[in-house]
Image 1: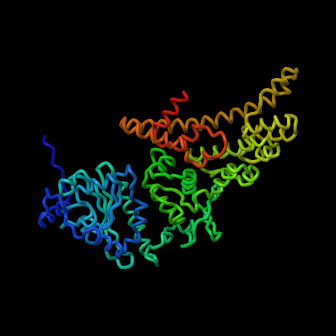
Image 2: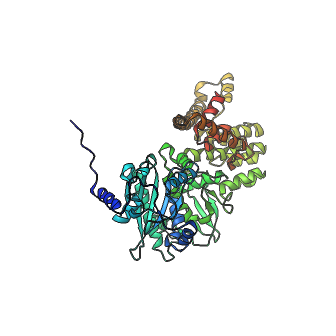
Length: 517
């Protein structure tokens, strides 16, 4: 039985007929060009979409070296005014003359997603041979019209285009969302000139900065993160945005959207979700957060409360660092990358307290929630003041209740001295509870790191040998310089901790595992 030929949607077939009636051939390669680059630059300056283009770029563009798709914005006739993408994506588009000044309407190049959005007035997604021109069959395109929210007039078309396997149904949802954001900004009193003018309910509940007031500090310690502005106002941060800012604060060279997606969500993360979140962050903080890569600008870099603790430690001001270290880093966060930063901060402060050889500083550190489970500092205090000291005994009991390792040697000495089992049984139970709690903590962390390594190994298998070698060389150079501020404190941070935070490519983890095996 012969299979039925695929059914062509009626609107698509009609678009083909209209295009060919206008003289467009499936073998035609070049579109009409309406303006040269200098004229396009002038058209941009005069166009209303100029004001929302930075927002659309934050939401959808990927001009990193690995970016595969293009963000395109046209005027109401289909003439391309803006393109944003990686060099490779732009080169692919140039071969089709998919460039600024080109007419991407039906009359200019035949059926495509932009032309269909202009005709239908709604979002459109076309794949491969649904395009009329054969040279476009390696592409998939998603487009939606942007209208003036005040008059309803068509302003232009937003399009995301790329190779077939780079576009999905999620792309259509993201384009629709970006169009709604752009139209909301255009509907504000300043026409979208201020990124802080987002009218979404969630943004208004979070609080939006006043235009012209720069962010001056980040509060990341504890369970109520916030951004502090130069006028003294304090705007709460959601946990996810605070996690992003903590990662930005930890690396001076910045992060790509792919890296942040992987650190926060694992393999389930998408750069598009990060760009949406970064749009909201930048709506609040403005120019304090830079893009491509994402990083804190000079005015905000190093101005977090956790960064201040590390800065004081580097300056040798241990007392002041203990005063500043009031709570754990984002205590409610369960993200592995944040947990590792939190552990490194604890290790830095604990090592500084031990290095001071000052019993008062050690007691002060061990009395905090962060230092209560630092058994190395507890043992250092015991050596300084003697184990019979009341301060040591009190902190030892407190640490045992919280899961810190309690010394077994004193119990052994009591057994040798002839004490009966029932007399030392409470101490033995304390030891067992403490060791069990500690073991469960490290087992949980170990399983999470193992899962991360497994995912990285799976990614590595998709890379060519040449790509793996290039990535490994680059990561070795980065790790040799250790760009994270959390790795610059004068403490014995373990190499595997730094690698776990920074390495987003699998070869680095695998090479570290091989070297430690």
